[in-house]
Length: 325
Image (cartoon, rainbow, N blue to C red; front, side, top):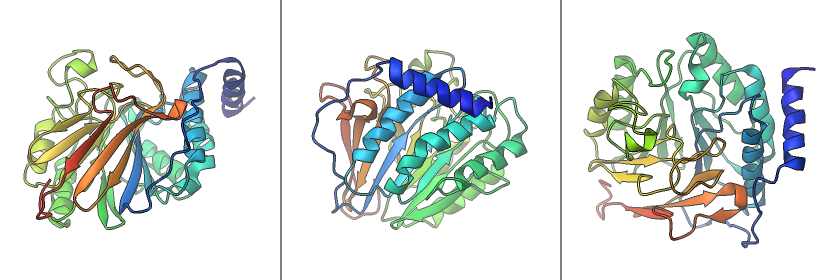
């Protein structure tokens, strides 16, 4: 039996026998029709043949999105789509996502360290692009790199990714940093720019505590963190959105870093550490002309995160002049 078929059989057995969530009776969620931009961010599905529970959790999140009324402008998965970057893992994720591809006008993803480590870098870049090319409404990365940009409803989305294989951190080359600088410099200063990468910056979003307290740079971009931060600090409209920490919706989910904002997405597949340990957490962004409203959702239970949880929702106010966050 092919590995994907084994994974699929394990998923079916898990969904049948393992009660992972209790589906709520919360009224059907509706996407606002008056918002210029609405998108979903999921972190770390980390699909693995060794853990059908992860696929089951993503399946429950998919079931929630299927019930939404209306269309989102985008879904962005901020890295660690797979555990080992294997073909069968990407095949399983494609199988899981296919029922909701039509619910998003665009589907984006950035690579995580698990997607690229311990394997040939160039082949993994192509494999990642091939995976996205096979999904309806998905936007694939170029065949020679992970980073690119695209406008969605007039708002710039910038995807980033390591420029070489790395076990945990990422390597952001001078070429990519210069490209990012150019992309930000030519963006509309009256609108936020959304930059997506797997790892957060050092000393943001509760690091190192939110990565189990391991070292000064662990859990972050790594040695290139300060270089990346210096690019962001040249502008005043950057919203940097990451995953990797496997940390729940909490006081650390959003940090105002002055000229830029740092948002850490919880996980949709693997375990969320921290005090709010619900599975299948994610973020919904509604972007207006004067503000960005972000709301945490427990997709697996079809509920929004309770109000007693820090950063269950938060608002980023945009300048009245429209020229800075």
